[in-house]
Length: 288
Image 1 (cartoon, rainbow, N blue to C red):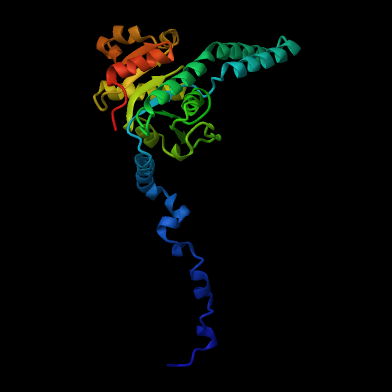
Image 2: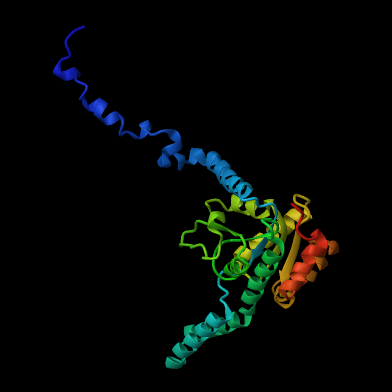
């Protein structure tokens, strides 16, 4: 074998740089590679599988999903927000923007009792169902503030597990502090998040909310109407709000839905009424 010259040394630039090249990183550890558009099918599969495996490991057998506005505060905080908005308006009483802020704060205070109902519901269900290590009817929310926080908080009041399915958004979203840490998930894709909301769901309890709440409600109604999913009880909390928001009879009058489609959901005013509707349809937690 010829003697190794200076140009063929093991210290050549090619050998030095190979292990620092992106191509050398194992595929399952290469974050940049996994973010490529071509890898979307893999990411979708992983986002379906990871929460499923963790829920199975945690013994989650069935869930109740609670939806509602992230903007609804508990009554004491809603009252403080109104007081602050009112004080700002008093300093500039002709300011139309400040006038609007006061009007919105007044409406949010009027709706703030739903925070208490959601919290009571989370406590009632969790204290009833999570006994002796059972994980039936576990409360699931979108993981954010407002009504979602209230339902997770109610479960925490009962020292019970609850789940939060957060989503990455252009603006930061932080999980509320009442979610069970081992059941706090973050999703990239809305589609997979929605799927996980319903995979173990026995009921969907919907409080007043905005676009996100309506999106999730109507997707579930559509799945029930078309038979793509079955045996999920939908409870709308606050009949006056929902009938003011949505003209259900108009949809029937225009021939856009059938009269029997209104049987796909129920109204309730209290946590107990919502829970009674659910156990009437599904019974209590199943034995171990």
